[in-house]
Every structure is written in C-alpha cells, then in structure tokens.
Length: 86
Image (cartoon, rainbow, N blue to C red; front, top):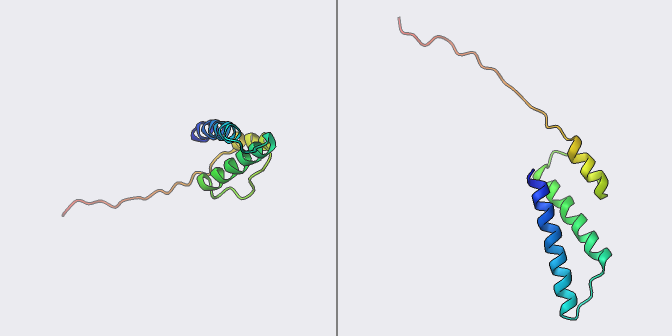
C-alpha cells in the first residue's frame, strides 16, 4: 500500500530532521516530532482519499480506518446496438 511506504518515509524524514536540528544547536522535542508526523499523515490521507470525510487523528485509529476502508465501486453497463449494414 502506498500510504504505508509514504508513512515510513515521513517517519525517517522526521527522525533525520530532529537529529539534524539538535546537532546544529536547535531544539526539537519528541512530542513535537510525533505531532508533526501525525499532521503529515493526516494531510496525506486527505490528499490521497479526499472522499473520506472523517479522518481520525490518533495513530491507532488511523490504522484501523485505513484497514477497514473499502472503496465503493461503481459500474455502468452499456448495451451497444447492432452495427451491421443492410
């Protein structure tokens, strides 16, 4: 699933950013990093699945929401008339 790969990349990016910020004298708490990741995941889901109205904000609920998600399929049949010439 593309979301799972993107989430892993977001986590790695956030860890690297936090490490780099601290290394160069800045401040970034674990809670700030965790909140930033949650917001980024929420925004990704809103972009990828804009038709989902209520996206949870807690990690466990997001996983459950995406696991239970089943897209609606719409089908349309079209009966073509005969195309033979007389």
